[in-house]
Image 1 (spheres, rainbow, N blue to C red):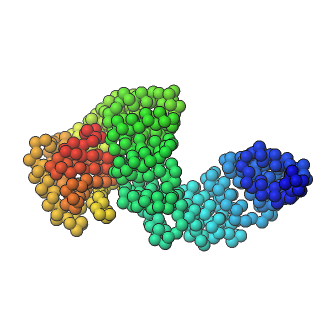
Image 2: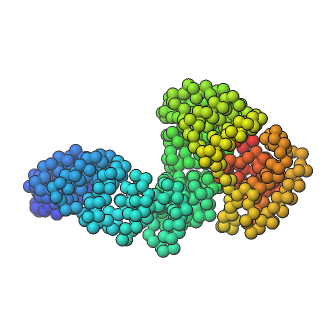
Length: 580
């Protein structure tokens, strides 16, 4: 057209400017528009401004905005978008305030970008004012306003307001559903996430990859491998497995559901794993007690060129912690900053304290607490107290307990650990005082609960549970295992029972929730099938020995996940090598 001397019209330039993402080319078109006298037209100037915003050149966009003789709502909104893209949310809110002062007619897009800025700042007060403005204009039920409202309240952790905002959207879309599911996930209401997801699938509502990523995370949290596998297959069919983000969530889901082989296959299917994906599979191996595999993957990660981050090192330290790799962990802590460019945080020092404490090197753990470049937090003292309880160091344990209760007087685990420490040392009066203090503060130990999934149905058990329809068969199987166990010379009572010499305690052990779940698994699954049990609390030593015995007597593989890690029992041995 230029060669043919055909005069360009503003509409041609506007169309071209909308498609440009190259700043140099955009500047050339801007220059040509000036030469041909096509500027000082509100539509043309707005298109140039938006081109600069799209190319990430906010400075030129602001200059263009300031020179505009006439400004419309699209120009204002475009500049606000540029501000939010460069994390200048305060500037975006200032523009909104000026628009309001000058009496501009707001549309849904202005509210959308303003609420996005409020969400980025987590400015609850400002967001509520914007919300009120939208209500006055009758735009609250518009999906373009209601969806960012939900997202804003979710990011500000005001879930009740997010629920109400969502309920007022007249026609929620996939982004709206994604926002509310994400909100429930963040506050730990994973059952609600799954309920919504199942409802959406039954109604054949359009879904997106973010919804599936959130469902993978929910299934990971509640260890629901059945739904997780179904969601995975569904996402593949729809082409909605988010690259890297969704795939990493899937790796974590399979690992936490006890299917490390599936997690590994999901990882190996990624062409170029990023740091998050590498971290997910390393953490999965560490969680299952496979330290050698975790460290081997870490070496592969470095060789691939992916850079480890702070979370990666937490996973590496956890692998070392559950396998007693003290010297390796010390070397990682020493070289994190100089060799890998990751500055250690309090979390990494807490991991090292835990490593020392589990290994019985309690003095080294205490020295690290005193000398580390951070003030010790509750986890620092809890790790030391846990080690003192395991290795029966009463004096140091008492110090750790006092410090821990100063920082977190509501932590029931601290009281239980202190009680066990007193009891194992024969200090019965002190142990009773701990129980009394818990009662005075209305603190109760969490009830032990274990669950197992058989044929897609979850069966839950608590201590001494007799409500299951197959209770008689379950306890009959336990009696059978009790007889087998008592005839074995390889199994000994825990040190606690030897010390306390309480026969009633031995009887109660049969009622522990994981034993009920194991017995149910034995009578409800094929004789060659693995039994996978999940528990909300840490496994006790007696139940750990019981699981080893069952695996030896029955020839079945048992996989038990407690609050700390996975234990894989085969032929009378556990993957943790009794180090947990």
